[in-house]
Image 1 (spheres, rainbow, N blue to C red):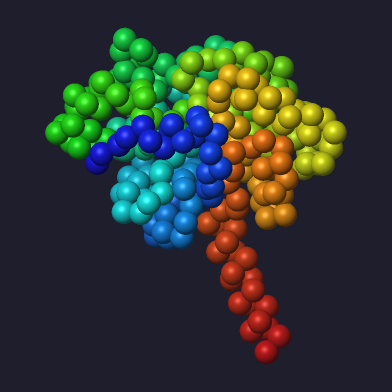
Image 2 (cartoon, helix red, strand yellow):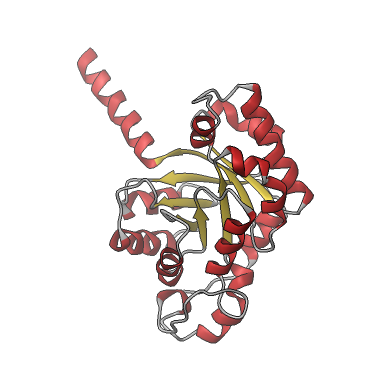
Length: 255
């Protein structure tokens, strides 16, 4: 597979780029999402049921579409980065990045030595099974997208330092976890939550990064744009399937 830095450049230029969550572990819904017009799709391997086998199949499916595939790993652990990146993820989202040290560890796990400590293997899918390894080794740090999820009060306190870390490209708010962790669960109109996300957007702008967020309500999309988010996801494959099935069941029950 061939990568380029075009998508990362568009992200850092703060273009409006739209995505969706894929948490069913299905390559079929991954392919479908990639074909309907999203700029990027998020393969959720933190809360989704998929494993490394389904990750590979999802990445292969998305590669046949115009969309960019980003993998959310389950934890900020080097081995998880290696698996996702070697399989061909074009970006990695890391949950619960709450400190500058955690942000620095995230970037280091994304990058080969001497820029980081990503393990080196040449014959993997991301490098064309070795055919393009030299180019991949030299430029992957410019091509791959690194997303830090902001989900705790500590992360909000440290947001300026996290945003300043070279190699963190997107400050991505996890709205549900953030509201739970600051004690206002699911209160997305609470002044404390609104103040927190405004700090995220301000830090992203100050340091030339993108601000991202996941929303479930289409009515909030325009509001996110107004607030200054540019890397925005709406809904999920599981939510879309559930809503469609409920609609069908209700229609049949109503005869």
